[in-house]
Length: 206
Image (cartoon, rainbow, N blue to C red; front, side, top):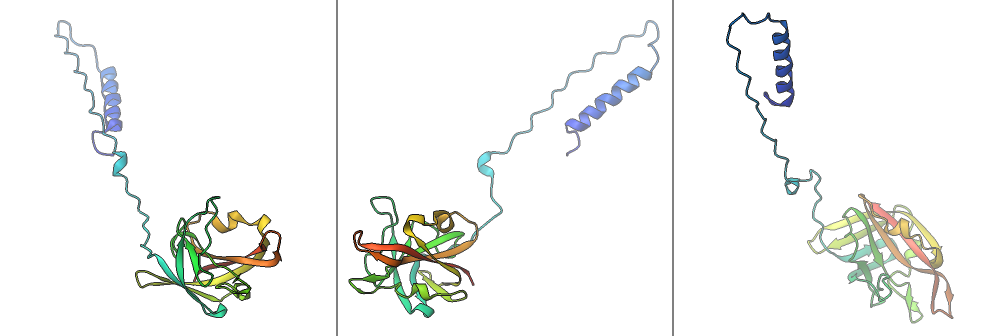
């Protein structure tokens, strides 16, 4: 605290009171001492809220443009995906291409980046046909528009019923960068025209 602050002023006031209490009475006929002038300390201005600057910084991350997974034979451009009419993530328009959910983090940014691809199309294999073959330690490469590449390693794979999709595990915000690869799996429901399960691959930066 700077000299002359509130605590210093208070200590000075206490000291002055003690000295006055220990002195004798003024001599008879002596003129009375003038009352001390009241001093009001100037207010200390509060710092402006818009002057705050966080000490935490994050490196800029380029837009993902290509996905490569050697162990699954994947080498595909990436579409940018938005949301469908029901607010779910839209699916890639082309079966041979995967898509990155542009409403979430970019691969390498804090949080889970999500990439989706079809498993098959018109009775033929699609881009994520072999996604279920991936195992722990397999490499996933995401090339970005700025020329950089984000490298991830698979940590686990799970297959779950679409009715029990683990939304919190897949989309929950996190400060650690991570990657989610999602496709369909399990048995085919002919009445619904879709697979009953999802295959989800989790990966973290290498």
